[in-house]
Image 1 (spheres, rainbow, N blue to C red):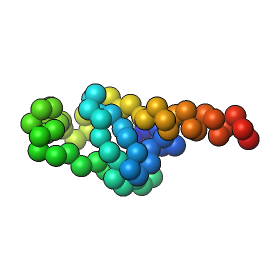
Image 2 (cartoon, rainbow, N blue to C red):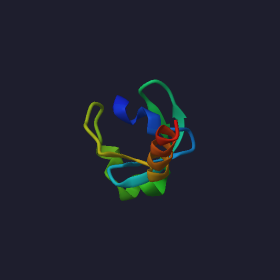
Image 3 (cartoon, one colour):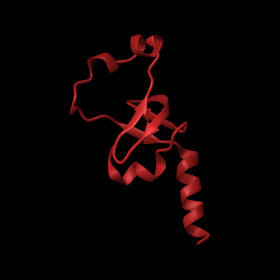
Image 4 (cartoon, helix red, strand yellow):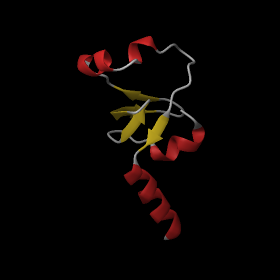
Length: 74
């Protein structure tokens, strides 16, 4: 994941990849894991994505608002 998004990525949080909302399972330094159920795999292009391909990643709005609020209250 891009390092500028790291603060918004948390286990059991949400992330949208190529417009598909997914639940985050695990997070490490610059990698996060999601599970994709067969129904989602059939209805998206995820099965055609190649390693190294750029993806559109949108972080959860609640995470963004919470982090901004915490920064303002310091």
